[in-house]
Image (cartoon, rainbow, N blue to C red; front, top):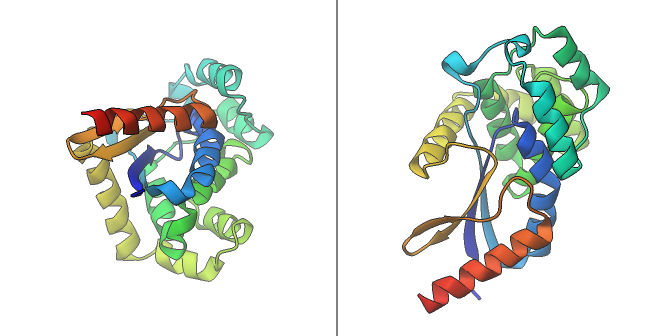
Length: 213
């Protein structure tokens, strides 16, 4: 069987991506022999969308819903950021950071995305700070110095820009989005509250539909 091409578009500052992360990682691990997976950063908080947390009163209620529907947990460090209200989420910086990590181990892209979200949503660490990426590199078995050097490179910045362009090209406007590529276009697989089993079933259904078309 030929591998099915999938693209996962996430934003490291997206709470629903935090909730979806365990399911998509379990699904990808279980079906790894069947998948060719691309992981790219979306741009949730860019330009005028960047604002202090205090300017987003819906966040607390949204987090409660994410917890209820996905089982995700938000840590003490992150809750302190919400209470303080001055922290600004910057998806540009997060995308550059993800690109720097991914360049060292593209086969670990899902794990690296999850580690970034753990750093923010559990520990309350800024994804604009180099030391956060040192910690992520250490916890995921990467060379911290190589990651930090890449973080400051023009290549990482260009890769982040390319990720945003890729998301636009695919028509992605919300996160998380998991897409399957077909000869006739792309099809969304599952949604933010899907389990690994549901993602597998959706992929199988998509394949059957493609064959019969």
